Each structure stands twice: as structure tokens, then as C-alpha cells.
Image 1 (cartoon, rainbow, N blue to C red):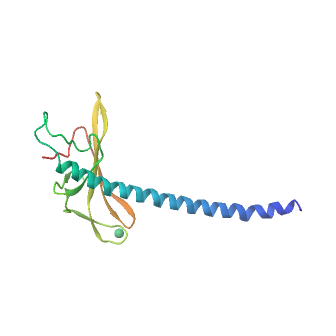
Image 2 (cartoon, rainbow, N blue to C red):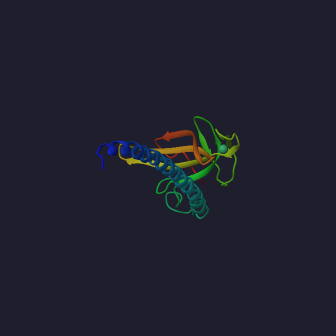
Image 3 (cartoon, rainbow, N blue to C red):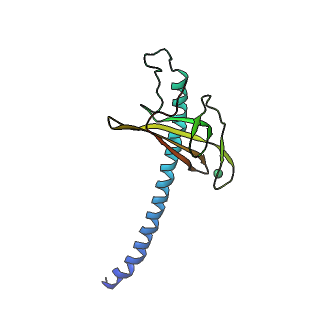
Length: 151
Ligand SMILES: [Zn+2]
């Protein structure tokens, strides 16, 4: 075999590899996004179940503390850039238009404690919608104390 043929073989092979790598990256991104969407659906169900089974007569308050030991999910009752209020009935209240298809989708919020130390705590909420195979962020809220209270 002529050694020069290796040069001519290399270029198309390399191009093929690069295009397949792009395809793999795209599939991988799509897969991760769908996993996050499934986690959200699962999270909404789990939060609703824990919330509905919460007991009020526990020393110090409630026995379910959303976001403390889990990542809690709620639908949004109302939200603006500064404040978010969760829907305690787990029904749709506030909608946001999808960037792509322009359909209105219910606003969802995830909520969790992101820091827990003597120097200070951090609680974070992220409001978003799900549409067109995407999680579309609306707003992030950060506070030093719990700010989604449930009664
Ligand atoms: Zn859409």
C-alpha cells in the first residue's frame, strides 16, 4: 500500500468522526434535558404527596419542610421579578409564553436550600416553564431564609 493513501484516508474519516461527535453531543444534550423534565414531573408528584401528608402538630412546626431535605416543586400562584408565590393547591395559575411556539405554559418553581452553615443559609427558587422539549427559565430568587412558606 502506498503510504500516501493514508493521507487521503484520514481526512474523510476525521470528518465523519467529527460529525458523529456533534450528533452524539446533540443527543446527549437532548437526553439530559428530558431527564431534567422527567425529574421535574417526578418532583411535582413527590412534593404534592409530601405536602398532602404533612402533619401540622409537630414540635417547631410542620413535618414537611419543602426544599430542606428535597428539591421541592410547585406550580406558581403568582410571580414577578422580585417575588414568587407558590400554588398550594398544585393547580395552574400563572402562565408564561413559550419562546418558540408562543403557547402559554404553566409556570413551575423548584425550591431548595443551597447553603446551610453558621455563616448563613441560602434558599433558592427557580421559576421556569417546560415547552418544546426545553426548560425555559423565567427568574431565579435567592434569600437568606425560607421564603416559600406552606401552611
Ligand atoms: Zn413551545
